[in-house]
Structure formats: C-alpha cells, structure tokens
Image (cartoon, rainbow, N blue to C red):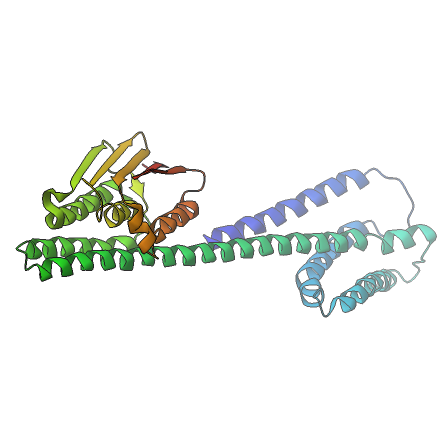
Length: 335
C-alpha cells in the first residue's frame, strides 16, 4: 500500500512539472522581446529551478526550518537566490563571452527562482501540517484503543467477582447445583477468554452468553426470582462489540435480589434491520445501593465503551422509578 502511495505522489509531481513546461512553452513561444539571452535559456533554467525547488523543499527546509535553526534558514534563502543569479551569469558568459547583463535580463535572471523557493516552503508547511494532523489522529486512536482495552479488561474481573461469590454461597449450602453451576461457569470463562480478543463478533454469541449467564443465576436462585428472557433476533450475524450487554444484566442481579419483595428481572433482546433493542427491567431495594460502594461501576464502564465505539450510533436511557430500575439500549449494528 505504501509503494502504491509513493508511485502516486511521484506521478503527481511528474504530471505537474510536465504541465508547467508545456504551459510555459506556449506562453513564451510567441514573445518577441530582445533579452540578449540564448534561445534555450528558459528551458535549461527552468530545469534548474525545478531542481532548486526540490533542494529547498526536501533538504534545506527540513534541516534548517526548525525551532532552533530557523534564523539559518532565513539566511539561506537570499544565499540560494544569490547563488542562482551568479551561477546563471557564469554559464551565460562561459557559453558566450560577449554576453552583457542589462536591466531587462537582470530581472529575468534574478527573480524566477523566487516563486520556486516560495513553492517549496508552502509544500513543506502543508506536509508538516498533514503530518502533524496524522500524528495527532494516531495518538488519539492509540489513547482510545488503550482506554478501550482497559475498559474491556474491567468487565471480566467485575463479572468473575460476582459469579465466584455465587459459587461460594452454593458451596456453603453444599448444594447439588454447584456442579452444573461450575460447568456453566467454565462455558462463560471460555467465552470471556477467547471472544473479547476480537474487535467485533456476531450478536448471536452475545445472546448465547446472556443465556448462559442467566441459566447460571437461575441454578442459584431457582423460583425465588422471576427471571424472563425474551429474544427476537432475526439477524444474529450482525457484528457488535463483545461483552457489551452483560453489565446491565449483572447490575440487575446484583441490586435486584436482596431485601426485595417478589424480585423479578425481565430481559428483552431484539435485532431487526441492523438495530439492536435491549432492555432490562428489575425490581430493587434502595438499601442495597446505599451499602454498595462499587454500585454503578459496570454501567459507567459500558457507557464509556459505547461513547468510544458507537458515537452517534446509540441511545441509552436509564430510569429509576421508585423501586424499579430500567435500562434501555438502542444500538446500530454492522451487518
């Protein structure tokens, strides 16, 4: 890709200078002014001017036009103009000893290098600006990638902490549900270890992950909690960021169980026409939140990830209605 770009830029330069020589030749072909200069003077000097342009743009300017050396570059500009002037006169007198400098050919000899030097300065200023913008975007992308990686890595420890707490509770009760719970946990860990390394994956995997997590929680709570999962996903091959939905469900189980009369958790997932509609509604007790210093970490995490990954492509509404908590997410997917 870089080689193609290099050839493209070289082609632009060749085309530009070719057009320059053609246009200059057409303009000056019919001018009947006695300058005392050879007929081929303009061709050879313009070739020299092109070389001067590249010498200034790619050697002198990059080395001297810096924060510490810019006074040297300012001095180098008149030096290049003076050198161009005297080297032209030297070759003119070398080829024709009778050549004399007049007021007319003096201007023709001295001033043409000026626009070529200015053009080289403008080119380098533009290139430096483009490079600075590219570098800034790369740094911003690196920062976003680093922040996103940090946020993704936060999901797994947060989930594991909650799930292992459930395992400890079942072990203390010597429950027969411990073994199937561990099997479900191993399936979830397999998902967490391999899937989050990918940038995106199909939404069907996320739905399967939610089902496994809910089944794991049902093994623990049984009929003590009313758990409903409604899935209406016609386009499960659409791509999405891994482990984006689970924090909402984790939050519902974390805060919607203890000290709640007839607790319930209702989860709905719909995927149609590249639109993911996801909602979690659960009962909860405000006393649970007041005792939990880490309350809301998972939801804040997912908000940050949504802002980083789907700016302008999602809407998230979170409502706290008395003892009912509701989260609704609408997300545009890639299919």
